[in-house]
Image (cartoon, rainbow, N blue to C red; front, top):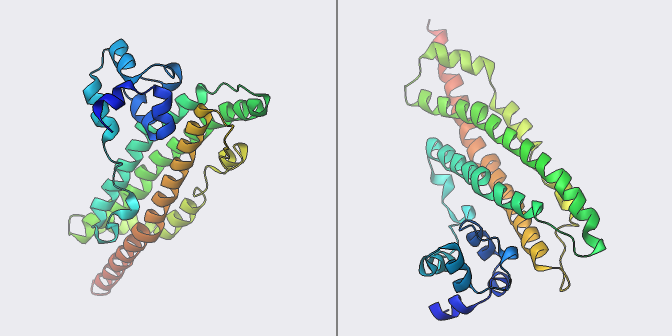
Length: 251
């Protein structure tokens, strides 16, 4: 699309073309539903933004998908850092954006009144529980896995490693982790599996699209942990336990 075409497009039309544009505009302080009838150029002038820069951001291709990365070949420490970065994006960017969409959800038809009421009640609880789970995972599971990785490189005292191995077990972490793998089930039920049709208002389409996309990201994230990180860490844990046992027989 030519620059002039971008500038002259109404915000509503841009978002109808690609719901992701609403996410980009949000981080320029442009809530698309507040400027729906204005052109991009008009809104940028009103907000004191460089329209050329905003267009460049809108034109940027989507970020690399997790599923496309060769994560199986990543060393454990790099994989953990990658997952922690994903947590940062979830907490600092995605959740605040979705919370803003839910908060701004104004049902224009009685069919959406109960959905709006239930989402405004359930979504903040989901966010609170999700953030707690993420920080707990980083403080316990990820810390333990990184300790195993350092121990394999000879950077942990055997006595400390023995203590940690006695107090932790990855199998227990894995079992507890599976219990959180469908955290959005309640939201999915409220929105009837994010159902939209030709009559659905644009703000609701955007919100449902974001919720559905976030759920897909969580599913991919969980698969990376369950199918790549855990097996690697379990093998490492078994290897370290075996080495400690062999060493103890000679003492």
